[in-house]
Every structure is written in structure tokens, then in C-alpha cells.
Image (cartoon, rainbow, N blue to C red; front, top):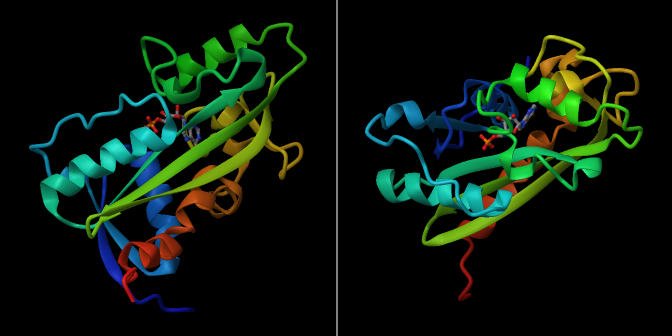
Amino acid sequence: MSKTTTKAVLALASANPHKLREIRQILAPLGYSCLDLSNWPELSELPETSGTFAGNALQKARALHEHCGLVTIADDSGLEVDALGGLPGVHSKRFTPQATGAANNRELLRRLEGQSRRRARFRCAMAVVGNCREEVAHGVCEGSIGHELRGDQGFGYDPLFMPLETPGKSMAELAPQEKNRISHRGRAFRQLPALLQRLFENRYR
Ligand code: IMP
């Protein structure tokens, strides 16, 4: 069994248990561990008002970094559906007033009723803030929206999302490692070592 040595402890500006689990699984083999928002209960909602995934990720990472001083990472992510002009996009979490996976998926199926154009993608922006610098990485997972809910893994829109790379299987039918291998989040967060290198490189050599 391979042993991973921890290189660094980072702050992670998220309280979403599903995201936290996935991000920790993606970062552990790279040697990073994370302190999540539960370590700073005095911080309630972080700002998320920019209108873009990258802008929101930066807002969240900046807010926690200013508070705790640690190098901080944050992700903002969501689903873009072509037939809905890119919606729900940055509004993925609050696509319905209930803001639950079940309600959001029901609403998505309703809006796509009778629609044969079902191309969609998950996007993730990961921001890193520290050492008076900021970097952002992006990850995309292309796919389409199914006609029924399938699978019980993952969270959010996973039961409706059919990745191009796993024909016949929804994202919620994939084992966690399989999802992380192809997911928008996996693709963004695996760039972390390169981003940290840029954050700490000496630009005045
Ligand atoms: P955020 O916390 O503002 O980034 O909200 C992202 C929202 O997008 C989540 O609440 C989900 O509805 C959706 N989402 C993002 N990533 C995923 C994923 O990996 N699977 C399913 N839904 C996702």
C-alpha cells in the first residue's frame, strides 16, 4: 500500500459535506489535508455574489484567508444546460426555493420535458489565496441530462447527469474514485500543486 506524507494543511472555504468528502479524497494522494469551515464557526455565510464560478470561488477563498491567515482554497461549481441557455449555472444550488437536490432535479426534468437537446456540463472553479497572491484553476465534465434519476452515489444533480466518458451510467452510478477521476472538481483540484508553486515562486529572480 502506498503511504502519503502530508505536505501542507490548507484552509478550505466550504461547509458542504459532499464537496468536502470529494475534495479530501482528491487531495489526500497529492499530500494535502484541509481544515474546513467548521473550524471557524464565527464565520457564517461567505460571500458568493460575483456572477461567475471563478469570481465566487475567489470571494469565498479571500474571506476565509483574511480571517484565518492560512493558505485557503475554495471551489464554486454548478451545472450548465445548453437548452436552458446555461442555467442553472451559478444558481445551481438555489435553482428552486427549497434548494434541495430532489427539488432541483425535479425542476430540471420539468424544464426539459419534450426537449431532445440535452447537452450539459459540470464546471468547477478552484481558487487559491495566500502569500499576497491569488490563482484560479478550472475543471469541466461534459455530458447530458438523462430522462430519469439513476443511482444513489454523489449528490446534487448527479442522478440526472450522464457523463460522456461513462456511457450508460449516470454520475450517481459511479464509485467515488471513478467520479473523482472524470469530474469537474477532480480536474480542477488536481491542478493544486501547480497553482501553489506559482503562488510561492519568486518572481523577482
Ligand atoms: P456551490 O456550493 O455554490 O458551489 O453550489 C454548487 C451546486 O451545484 C451544488 O449545490 C449542486 O447543486 C451543484 N453541483 C456542483 N457540483 C456538483 C457535483 O459534483 N454533482 C452534482 N451537483 C453538483
